[in-house]
Image (cartoon, rainbow, N blue to C red):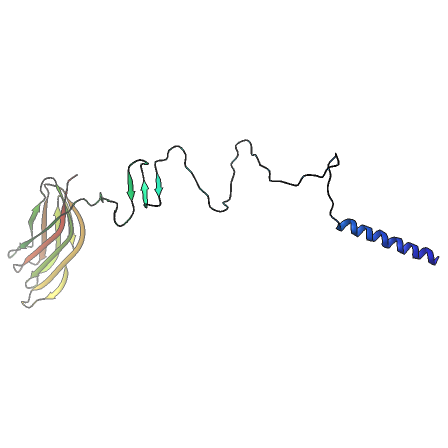
Length: 227
């Protein structure tokens, strides 16, 4: 009985050892004709039925545009070519690209001044400052006015009339000057367009009308050629 047990243990050990060797040692595959199977190699993948294929960049790519493109980039000369044969636009400080602001054509500076004198008993008055010449448009950008009134007179309103439109200024009471006159000042930045043939007229209104004040107007802007 003891010998049988010892023989059984020895048999189990041999079987276990053979199993380990079989698992660890690599195996070589053979084909049906008994030759070794070929090593794996890179294969081409063909996609049919014109699908959309997405790819991911690996390293640097070169992209070519076929069919004679009209836009080209010249890295050596820093130019953008709109015509592959002749025309180029150079982007550098030495050869800037010429541009024109179509919303701001050539400006011809303009400024003018006039005064309104209000006689005793007259509460309001107006005076023409200029008339826009033919072929021009006057653009008024700034208006200023200065009024000095006697006694209890107060300046109620100041305005610029341009071709049927009225633009009112806000007169600010600045106090009394050395001659005892009440001083009013108005200065505003505007954008008024006056077409050719239209007049620019100044307007002032006061109350009561006890003195004989003067109100001075000035406008600043520019002429542009009429479209």
